[in-house]
Length: 260
Ligand code: PGA
Image (cartoon, rainbow, N blue to C red; front, side, top):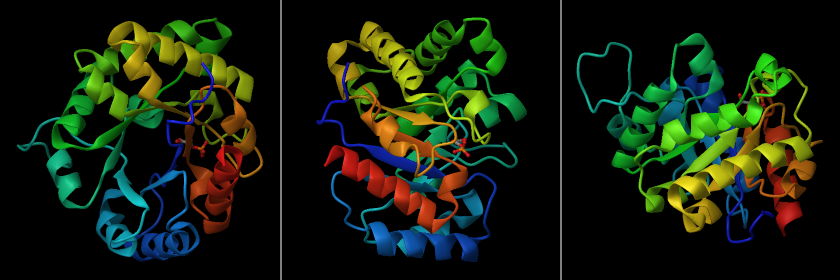
């Protein structure tokens, strides 16, 4: 399924555990200066929790949106160290990354907790960016497509077609994250095709056609155009290259140029 011009490309920066609030605000101001009002692309910045307030303030009134990197599935309660969807909404977030492979790998997130988090985010009116992707050993064993299907089906189970159409999925092969070794655009497009087919099977062709599916893993200003050109790729989740204004602006501008 070729990239559909009715799906607005989405470029999200995942700042991971980088930047104090003043540092984050400075980067957000620089990005706002360069990208506010950029037509034809949705830009989302996902700083650490402690910088959400400062970045939200820096972005206020701009077209750049604020996102968080994680949430808890309960609305409130005795969950030391956790943050709820309502808290993120209150902090000005519109998006939240769910099920990033670093959460799955280092913090024991499972398909089940990811599914709960997706439901909590949607219930609060946040747009989840649901991350899926295989490890190198899984790729070598030929399991990529089956694994990604399982992750997508688990994360979206029981969610209505209308809600699914409005969220985003990020295909992030674990071996490509932070390694400088991105997937090939053709490979990413194949897996993204599998994700769209899986969603079509679960929720119907209409929802699948509206769902935005991003690629993530060592995206840079040098390779973003090739990903945006690949069939079915609706944008990118960017880690390392989102930490500097020049590289993130380069990525967003290149994405816009491909779709202009
Ligand atoms: P990377 O990270 O761009 O540094 O590879 C991507 C991600 O983890 O979302």
